Length: 397
Image (cartoon, rainbow, N blue to C red; front, side, top):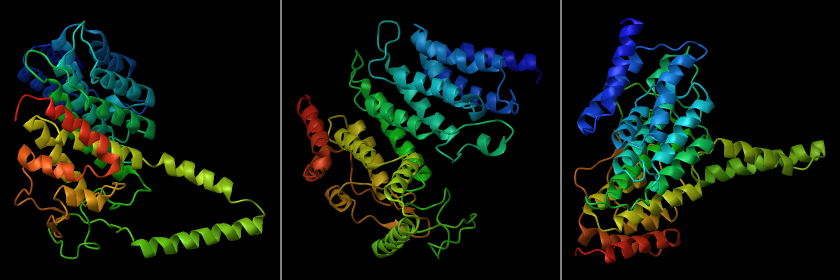
């Protein structure tokens, strides 16, 4: 296609993104994804100022300032379909996109003078898609990052990841209603899916977090029976407590000897090491407790669809082995309380087998007794009780 034809197609897609019909908006967003990845090349210095203004700056401005709900819905969805070469040529551009979507996903966001549930939901979906496209830390998960080496692309840093986690956790408190009912549940369901995805991305990117050190399936070094023809990569299994203690004793002994020989205290080195550790840690104890607590709160609430989504996401997070979720408070007690302690694990695939779902999370008669068994865990007490209080205030059984 000529440049003129490419621009005409882009104009046509932009016009359809403003349509109030959700199906048309979805088709236009899918078309935008294909068009931007096939055309509009980016050079070694990144996208031109004209391309940047025509796409990212225009879409961000519409989501932030337009008073037409159909336009904010469509362009919020479109931001998540852009390739990494357009989304993240530099930190400044990536920040502008993340700030726009985080604000649009806020439960208090207004379009004109009224809230719009569809805009909030689409912003959450795009926020997660941007994270998947750009990648976290030094990892790149999008084909554009791996193949278009000539185009400069930055990945999400720790500050940006914490910003996205904060936006998704705030969306879990979206209880807005209108004549259609609890429309805030649309945002909560989208946020739950996003939290699960972002948790996996963050754990894999955290170089100092114990997990399988591979973006692919575990190799035969860990699972000898795995012979399915897939490309294998070396996988390191986390050592047991004895092995870790031996490493720590050796490390401490080495630092003590260095301190004696150089006549310098060890403390400054520890501070430096701690800073480096924090820079490469995208998921920590506090964040893990917040994420799991938000899921447990939703499991305790009254809508069957919300409970079902929360239960399924939580089940996958707690039982997945690649990567294994670190920093879970009282993991054995929580697994036992939710009936997940005896899940079958398939060594050939490295994943959980779901031949029979142990818990019907949408069934309140099955779910509430399990959740109340976890209320004794101090980290989750407030979240579970607040969810139960919301359910008690409902009109259903």
